[in-house]
Image (cartoon, helix red, strand yellow):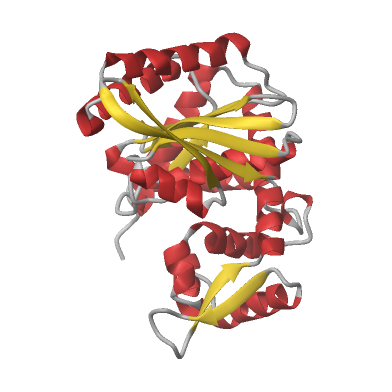
Length: 313
């Protein structure tokens, strides 16, 4: 039998040391995850059902394959979730002999609470590291995924707070994309600059947010939630890059706004858009917004129909 490559034992020891360190750091060794009554595997199942719609619609076997867990173990977890009213089953659109899976309203609320706790824990972990070191850490994590065989999987979507340069990106990409796809002139870019500038100048972290979407280290989208009044929030500047369309990012960005608006105590959300922005309108409809007003106007070098949409929270 050939001897192991020189230095392999020390590298194995280093990897094992890192594994022990990181599992302690993120609390995986706790009996329950994120101070909840759920195990790590149960939280992974909830996340998959909440975010990977294609897997969920194909049923339990596809879910077990995606998560890499035993089918019998998964069946027990799903049974427990069903008894707690956290999931619902319905005949699969792909095979009537099977059931597709989805989170119930209770399950969705549970997942939202867990994700909020997870984000808060990671934010706390990162808070003691400056921005440059945070980027080095994230880049190193991406390298680990790539080197350990994750390069064939699509890069995950990451939503984060804006960093220096991001607001300029929002203005630039709105101007460039809307000119190319809809023929809007420079006055539209000027309007976006005014909205973005006012957000930075008057930002109130208690009741306002901006999310920047990243994929593979590249910025691919944005959305803003701003205060219109004490009870009303306004969704603004939703943008998804062409390279990230079809991945559910637009819905994810709007859902983040809705969740934050509810936590912040708003009673209603409003938004202003144009009737020709068909993809955005579908996202708003799926998220529960309803059209309440239409107004023909001439702006940005075009004859347009402005629309106001509302969502009761």
